[in-house]
Amino acid sequence: MSNKILQAVRGMNDILPDEAELWLWFEDLVRAWLESYGYRNIRMPLLEPTALFKRAIGEVTDIVEKEMYSFEDSLNGDHLTLRPEGTASCVRAVLQHNLLYNAPQRLYYSGAMFRHERPQKGRYRQFHQFGVEALGFSGPDIDAEMILMCARLWRKLGIRDVTLQINTLGDTAARQRHRAKLIAYFSQHTGVLDADATRRLHSNPLRILDSKNPAMQELIGGAPKLMDELDEEALQHFAAVQKILRQHDVAFEINTRLVRGLDYYNRTVFEWVTTRLGAQGTICAGGRFDGLIEQLGGKPAPACGFAMGIERLLALLQEDGMENPPAPLDVYLVHQGELADGMASVVAEQLRDAGLRVLLHCGGGSFKSQMKKADASGACCAVIIGDDEARSGQATLKPLRGGEQACVALGELPGKINGLTDSN
Ligand code: ATP
Ligand code: MG
Image 1: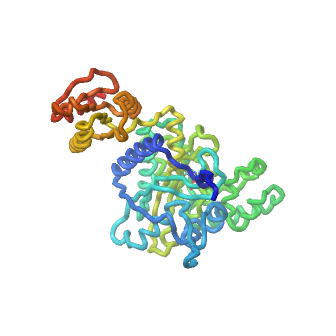
Image 2: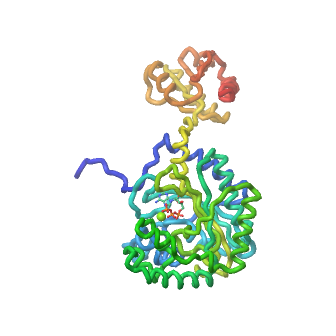
Image 3: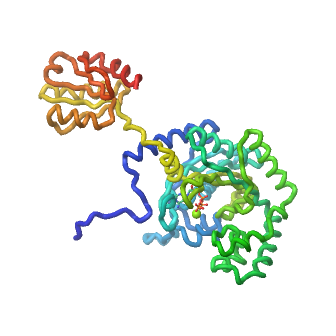
């Protein structure tokens, strides 16, 4: 048997404790922000029937064609897929449990998503998202609310260099007309189309507009515009979204080439983009998907949602010089001597009863070596108990970020420590 240390799957990262502090801080902040808009949490399985994603996302999309972790369960032959995104699962859960029965729903979820992409900065095979879905809402007010919420989150996080791009994809009839015109147009220029575009010419010509191939940019620039096909109603919806954004001074660019990588979108789509993360600059993306609920077997109902990539957002914060928050620890409890050792765990429990976060030193060692560990722990203070202290019902309280140490009666420790943590 080899004794080589095994490695994680390529493109899937461990998040080590120092960095995990930042994740926890971020997740708490995001949850509070979501609750401030009345969104409620929903949790779905990581594995779903493969058919769900094929039906929801579309057969001719990057995700379904080449990014899904799909496999056959060798135990029962089921075709399963690790979720590449959350919207399909969320809608499946809502329909399965009939949550739209008498009221629309504002929902959010968070967790791991899986896509078999080429790993690089900001692009991983397991990555994490917060996803937000408003199901059963048809008006432009909810589209705008979602964008305004994002703007608030960026302000809360101190993120500045991020721009908002919006577009409208119209409704089915307009898209059909546009599709026919695109096929006609690209068919006249088959010499310029690359392999991907040729393959998509008849299956998903809209996605050709999304191509980043420099050799095709001129051709794409001259392609028929969906904007020219839009129905009055869709145009009014789009105008209303813009009006609300202007009312709130949220700057945006209309990017008519923004089509998004999933088939289910219609009408409003948006992306928040930064230039500071290289090619992986989209930190948050979403839009309306009025047809998806019906497509997944539900009674027709409109919907809108977005997802943000946690890795990319944290990378942006770190780029801005944000440091990992300190370890969440109030007390490092140092003890030595037979009597003191016996008492230390009792004192630690009492301090925890008082709401403090206490790391009880384990493994013995000299006062000096224990104090070194206390200094490195990030705790706000050390509580030191030797046999002398133990006999007199006292402890030495030593602030670790400046200040004089003092002898304190055990009963007064919590109050004194709280005084220290408050002033830090
Ligand atoms: P991209 O164009 O960068 O491939 P996408 O359009 O495929 O993104 P969405 O499906 O809209 O992405 O997912 C929403 C967000 O999730 C993205 O804006 C991004 O922040 C994040 N994201 C998507 N794929 C990855 C990945 N492989 N690794 C890390 N984050 C990702
Ligand atoms: Mg992608």
